[in-house]
Image 1: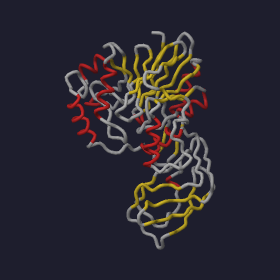
Image 2 (image 1 turned 90 degrees about the vertical axis):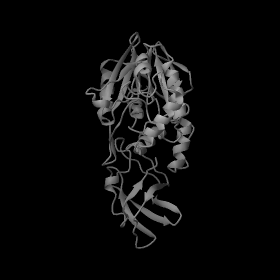
Image 3 (image 1 turned 60 degrees about the horizontal axis):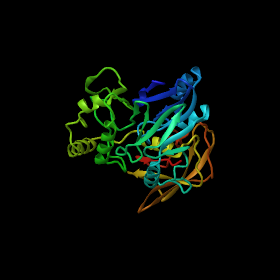
Image 4 (image 1 turned 30 degrees about the horizontal axis):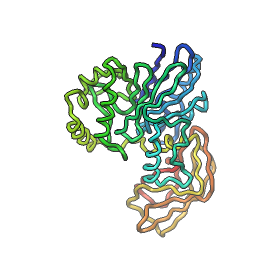
Length: 355
């Protein structure tokens, strides 16, 4: 094997990030990087990404690629941060444009939000080849979990993203917008057509069935023999029935909203330009009058911004910023939910911030 693979486990999201490099040229790639995010404060930090960057610098690896298997719902991507520090191109499957369109509609993205994938440096088509150093690699489109899911084949290794989990666990959910269990089955069978000793590198592990140690690599042969969802004895119809039943019992990923925002926009800073912040849900709202004013603090800045809270009988609640632009520090990319000032007796509001 002419490549070296170094895994990094992000404990908070149960995610494996990988540094893969060609030993002959010392040129490499980062796959599925993680940015730390504190839900209670709405702030990001680069602790885990800095560990990855430290390893790369210590080993004098030149990063050519920062690869994403898909738009993650369970963690924030550190791809822009790593590119800013090390260079390289951010790559993802070309069907990310479908995700941008879907979630742009769901979360009322501002008019300036591009849905053409131009936030990424490279959009891979199914079967497209590229090089990591001198090592020929390829992208395999594997929709199902989301439309834009894909895997990276590097020599006899496949980095599977959220298609497969370890053989004692199963497969990823398919109930996100654009996801489909039947499509997922077909995608997984494409992966399992590779020879039995092909090594599969997981994106996540959750210690199923009382297992005490995290695992991140297995083989095609082990999946075909032991995976309870897609072993060789499971038919397509049986998988669809099983997957859809499991998905109906799953909750909403706690980091879906910030994860989608960072990944789809490739944001390194927050910029709100004459826009509105869409309220996803409002209940038990009490206002003395239809329109009220309050102040909001943004990130770590001492500045305050006047906002208008507006209600309409047939529309979601909306917040309108009175200033045209806000920029926060790189490690504080979201409006700090905990520092919202008196929102005039408004209770139980769920909100989604637009980048």
